[in-house]
Length: 358
Image (tube, rainbow, N blue to C red; front, top):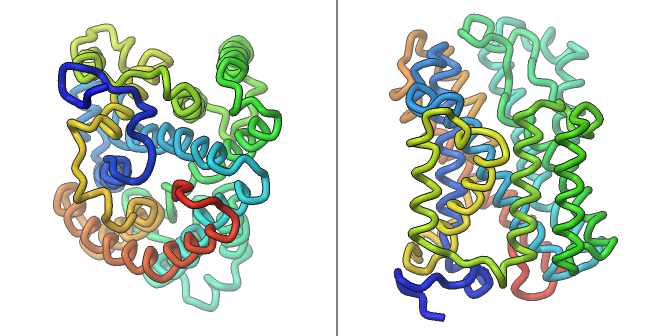
């Protein structure tokens, strides 16, 4: 099929390799999470632009939702490229843990350096080491560190971005189990299983094994599932620019807000993001070969933002965003070149050539 504006190519025709906009979208998602936190951490929640215009949507939730969607798509692609549990698990560990452990230590150092406690007392606190063990391991996230950022509008919060990673790790396990069961290789079976999972979650939300089991997190898990289903059904999914434009307009014109939250919004967001990521007419090839600093931006930004708010009391959200984005880019670049990229190269011991990075 032609790759022009009038004829919709199929998703499957454009998912091989890295010549797409996935990296740019991940970078943008990390950046808007940082921007949201600039309003939250200066106690100006209601001034955040997306929320002010299209509540209940906000930039922080939107960025996280995009990450979950693309994660479901790319991790499913990873399994299908090498459908075996050992390489799948190794790929997930090598992608997540080097930067997660480094971000945990980085957060502890920044929080200690700007905190209200002497170093001896800070390092002797059981709360400090509970934070390290549970956060770095991905078991869960202990958000507060003793004495950290005590005078900030959002005191003691150490790294509010990391709460999503234990959830994502649990979804990786669930997807691996689906792969072992053969569901990912059988599109109709995976679609049927997905419908059953969604129906069960809607009918009985309380037993859903998410922590925290909130409506917003269940929606993020749905986006992960939709990303996975899109990859499995990619040979039947057209990338239509007019359809994506119409879908993107729905949340804007929907006065009742039905298209701004819930399952309908998840479907809209999934299609719009996948078209933006893979439609050949939208491709920006120069960005596809850039280093992947997006994960580093996500995991290192929050303590940097808190430190800037501590150092410059009363700073406004936009100057905070400019300063935090620049500083976090430096840390994310160091993390990529010193930790993440070397770890990703180890995947070659477990994967076949051409397997995606994520």
